[in-house]
Length: 347
Image 1 (tube, rainbow, N blue to C red):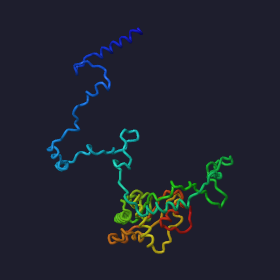
Image 2: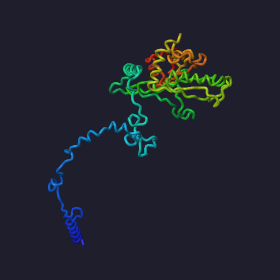
Image 3: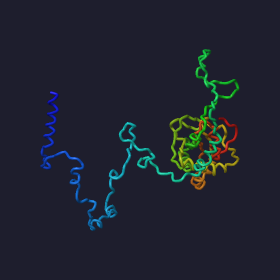
Image 4: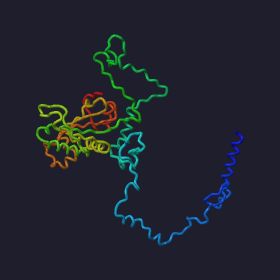
């Protein structure tokens, strides 16, 4: 059986090789590239063909496009990314926001604000030079002292409790990573919040004026919030009255607001010492308040001062959110931007 099988396959292959083809009506043999390659090439090439002059003159794409009554559907000539992100396992993934074909793509910025240029060219390098800790080759830092109590069996309340020093000593300091070129503190966003207590008892016109004023100085559409707590003297019930407006500033809006604040508003405040050194939240966020008279110093309100009733211009709280992890680094950054501080500093 083993000797008959190869002979059967060989006879079948020979018979197929000499079988007549229905398309060419001739025998089909095996050929190589050098055998009949020359006969398969066309004698006349389409590249050398001449186009009639009438066809060339009749081709006018501009006239054809202007004669078209409706626009072509975008699906024919334009790629549109998926409208919704359906998860990392979906076959259709939207491109990143930096891709021009993304729905979230925003061209620019074409020019940086002056504050950003100053930060990139001067402030960032100065902060890095002031906070840089040099570690020479071969340096081994001393072992760090324990920050939490260990289990010694004397009391069940010692486990993971703060390792306090002697009575009257300093509190446990926050740990901070050394500042390098990759984590130089910078301002990430600015929050403007205005609480209008008279909006609950004297009408919503106070809230409208506050929203217009905050929106004018921030160039951002504000959001309104209802009260979460009850304040009996002001007649405010939780969840019933809308008493606050807030605006979140990012990127260029944030840069322009800080520039106006440092260069126009703060220098014109009479007998203003600066921001208190205790105004931080120990995580690099600094908050200070502006009175209604100080809010009226912004150029957007000052140029249209008659549009705002003087008694309705609100005060506000301004929170500068920085990437620093300590108030000490945040104050160093804001001082470089031109915002002064006074009083006792609390890190």
